[in-house]
Image (tube, rainbow, N blue to C red; front, side):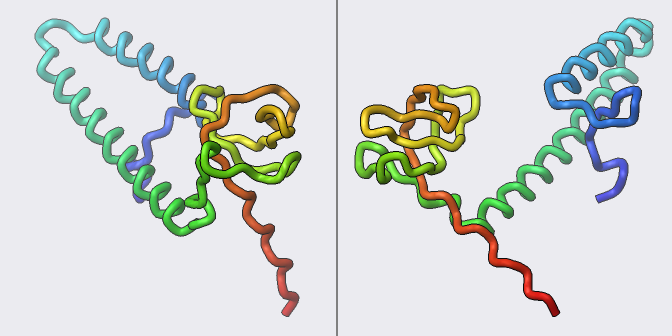
Length: 141
């Protein structure tokens, strides 16, 4: 991947901005560009905007492909169990799927009465799966 293919917004301190912050910065940049261009420059602006969108789309597709490959390589992520079909042992910490929560996947447990996140708050869980085994210790060679 070339430097040009990367689509990150860099802040004034040289650090990548979080996606929400980057979106705001992107909007400000586009508004500023639009204000600076005269009506005669509209075709140039549209061409520039289309090339920026194409670069962003290509970078996004590449990130999706990389993440999809990572997920495919980690089959521990495919062991989701519906809470209506099976439940983990009480008080056992597991990965939980909470589609209406702030985090769609989190750590939680069932206390015998309801689902709770690891901080003890009640959560609405639709699926769960056991935590993966920890990595084996490195072999000194």
